[in-house]
Image 1: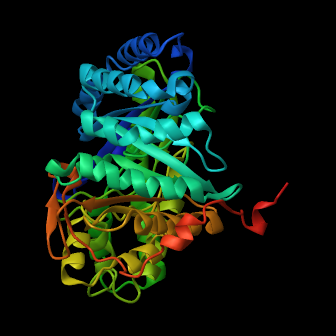
Image 2: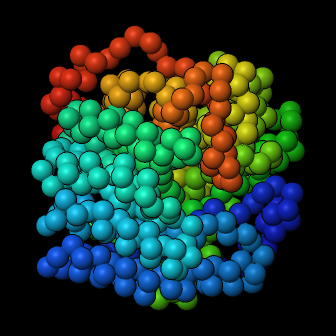
Length: 451
């Protein structure tokens, strides 16, 4: 049972420390929508999303008002669209447009699930579906896309990795007027999870029930303030403070998730514990790491601090919720975190260091802008490196990278809002083309054979 008082203890954190519920995401199964034609399927998809999600904006506004906790985003995730589009992959665009129209009709911020799962192999219809992504993301506003190219159980599908480097480049080119914004709505995964409420990687897994509510909590500012209150503590005491703080934040998320599910006639899915930053000062994961004692995020010791933070957040959150899931940990998106932005501008934070950090935190290389002339093979190699970390360590990793058209190192691209601004970060000039052209499958590690 919940004691509402536990949640109300956190209310004083809202104004000063940026506590919020980052997203309430409704997952919807669209498998029953598959019809005899692409047009009929698109109509079914639109009608189903509009019917199931028609009250999500109203309900979240009511909950925010009643409990005094800001709910920043309202979102929908759907069954991986490559499955819905399988009978008519060449007309996937129609389903993508219907999904975007439905998202606008119900008023959600984003709709995720224009996705494909090709971690072990890629059927012809899946390849054609993936090839539609650049055009669809360029011509839609709220639709998000993801592709899972590897897993700890199956290995890494390098044919899909090669293709996704090309798709990222094409998406940037088709959205060059907005700085390659389409790439901000496209993420490439290894070990993608089925109940992630965060964009751009959310989709509704085929193992989920018909309609589910998943909630993502946040609160980097709250954690930073807690650490500031014990300036002379050792690291064990810091970890305990972070755990207690994560517990309080997660209890708020649990309450909102249960109430939202009840009022929207959906099942309560999970609470994602992730510390998700924003570009606002005082709402930064980088600032937490610096408060631990680093002069700048990216310097030596950063990976160790992040590992401790991530673990403490998970331990505190798991005690506070009966259903923890999604990604759960600490996000390090460069463009969405003012501390990361400034460290990248100083040159303290580079892609190689970010890659090391992703071995111990949630997700991976996120919202990183690189020069527009970066070859597709280099982007594929970056994806492969990140997927290897996920595969070997049995964790979710991802790449959301923007080769900003016409931009070079020293420039920046500004997306505004929660997506922030990204300094253009250098990549290695040495090529990886021959490696990427080999294709095939990087086999799963030996420790994956657990049956």
